[in-house]
Length: 250
Image (cartoon, rainbow, N blue to C red; front, side):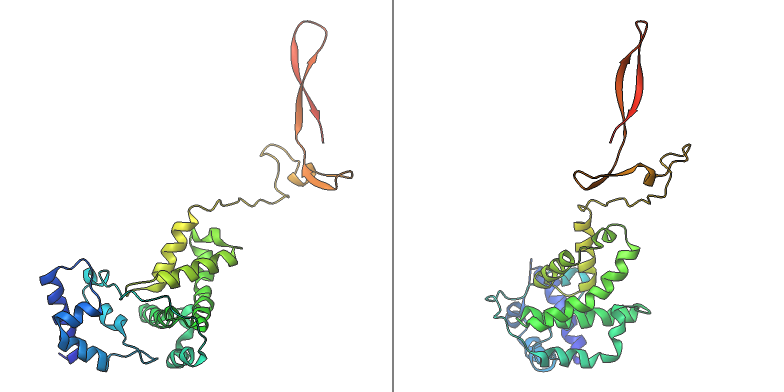
């Protein structure tokens, strides 16, 4: 068992013993200072910060959702292409995973790239946020063709971007960032009215030869294009009975 695994094992035991509602880096420092010192020295991200995602991802699943980063003041926006480049260069030959992941390993790599960029974006790097949106948009493009509720987002690129930016801000504990985005779009997509598209070459009814295009008219006065429907009016003829008479109108 390597040192990292021993640290993870000890943290799992402490979490079981103490049963905290949440825990953070300060909680680890107080109850396992030796573990904290090892993490601070050896577990670093591509940009040099402590990689808490690497630690929390190794914990038991029931503990991962308890992780709560320390509250910080709103990050000051900045632009640093170098930070983004450090992450992308590490996975330069694997960026295809956002378009066509081949297996479960590719899905894991996809999340590693996304989470690394998200953490830098949460620190205030605007270029990292832009990179996340661009890469994840390729994945969403595939979802639009294969998932019922997410397909309702088709043609709503600006709204998709707003949802992605919100996910970047809100993403908290370790796990799959792409799964988090998927669930967000799926849930929000349930409230989008799906418009049924139809062809004007379709027949008006199964037993009628007329096509829908035959019922489309142009009003020269208003320059409007619309379909017209028959209007029913009462017609009283000889005798005391009344019958329906179909009269077309524009």
